[in-house]
Image (cartoon, rainbow, N blue to C red):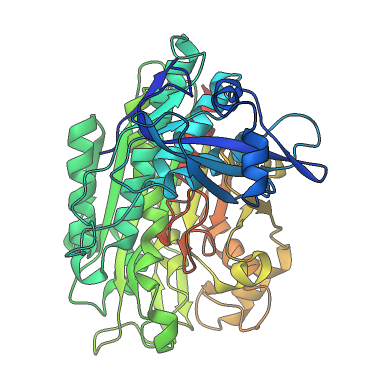
Length: 498
């Protein structure tokens, strides 16, 4: 695992394979931010001219490499564009992205030092998180091309190296980044190697390691408990479903949060079969469950004074002779009945069971995380999650946490008529799992879920179908494949509550 440290070493004299600095776009040229004075002096005060001569413009994400000023110490200087800073200050997300961009520009085996602006502990955390998340690589199935290279060490150069808050910020960055990496690993693992049983076993192992209580309900326990949604989705697969419950209870918790995650380890669409291209990335349909498990472990490791109870509803949605059929009726946990008119609208079924169970714990707030609808991707694109809630206050609290954590999220409504349409669309059950209309799919899914949350409990639904998996090329600290989206938001929510 990559290690990261703080150091007060001078940027011009630090011994490292590469040093990352920022370049700010200013007017028609570029300027250097604080922390690069010694490096500029090492280039005879001509560093701006050198970078400009190589075409540097300061555009966000732009990378310009030059030989280091001191042979034998830093071999390469990596200048990363930070964009413009119209208010005179860089945002923490700018620093997080720049650190990720810079570390990706170096070889994974190289040691890298970061001379980016760190005026306070939050900036230290941003640089450290970006560096650690940017260094991530999924190589478990690679046979060559550096797959076995040990990752080089990372160093954040800062005058705050001995500051208590900065040290705490570094610890949080390390723990959070490790949780994000674990989530990315789960999402990137081929579905043939991560069925519900293996996924649940991984959660149990992590729980034992970090003092989180983990309970697993197998298919027999699910049947005995009446979890018809999870069983109905998983009945077409030879790999039976699981419901995993994680509990972290510190002394004197200030609040009780419940996390619920969709864990469809592979989604073929069931008998309402997806297209072949539509299935390619469906190993990522368990990203919500991965995120809530990862966040729970991170919160426990950080010792935050917040009680967390998490539910990961795991199933494989496959077509077979035993699969749920369109028009089948499932009796959900708690007794409500649902007519399944589209077996590819399965995530809301497993989440419905888990939401009723989470409500029984009477938490102060429930947050569910799910790669739930393509409709949300149509609405918000691939980088932004949709946030829904049964109160504006609860929803906005989670959105604010996402903004602070650097994850893009946008509030969306739950029109009352959507639940009416779900209820009226079934003639034989309490409600259908779709409205039968081609529009408003993300809103209808949210309305469905909200019907399984007990009255009086604040609830927020995060549709992360877009940002949970990156089909394109890497950028900033975001790799191709699993992104680990929502871990940082949930950790930030718990930290802000404490």
